[in-house]
Amino acid sequence: MSLLLISAPEIEDTQNSVKQLDQAIDVVLGGIRWKVMLFPEGLNRKLLNTLYNTLMAYISWHSKILVIRFDVSLYDSLPNNNTISKLRSYILKHLKSHYNSKAEFGWVREQNRYDDKCHYHCFVLLNGQKAKSSYVTFDLAKKARELIIDINIHFPENCTYMILPNTLSSIQAALYRLSYLVKNVTKENNPAFAKGHYFGRIKHKA
Image (cartoon, rainbow, N blue to C red; front, side, top):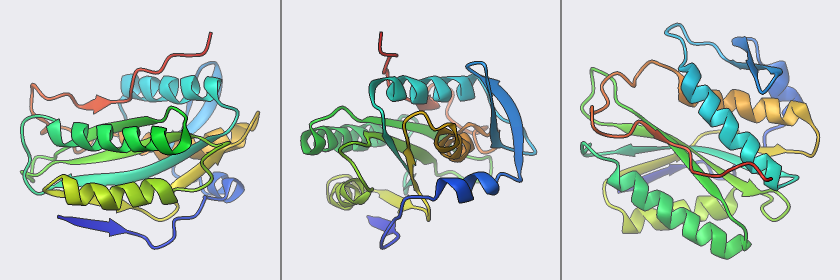
């Protein structure tokens, strides 16, 4: 068991993030033109739509959203997603208890043709009125490694984004970073009967 963590994850500056969208393509989602990451092998548009709908549904419930990106890798890859499901349940249970607010946890599974081990790209969505940084999620990840065997968890630099009320640029910054999850490459070797992603079941606020 091991955990790869940066020492002090900071909230990404929205304006600087938007300025760095040089490797991007334009897509229309929800009637709005957004920039997402550009991949030589393309992206999965259906998966992008699902990701976008999850993000916008969560935004409909909260005026501020804290978005946290991290990665999970396994030493032994099983033809199922039981390990990531255990991690998801553990983190969501304790986030809800800590913040007294519903959180969301999404993931995509990847396993390329040259590697027999799979990994997951993940994100957590939190009520930004209550969650101001990724430290609680960071701490839960450290505790999870003691309970769930055979996992690595990595929080990359600039892994945290705050979506602000009525500020499209803050949504753009988070969406651009999350769009990495919908790339086509490295998903080609996923087991046929294992789900390739899970973004939760949150619905738009009526």
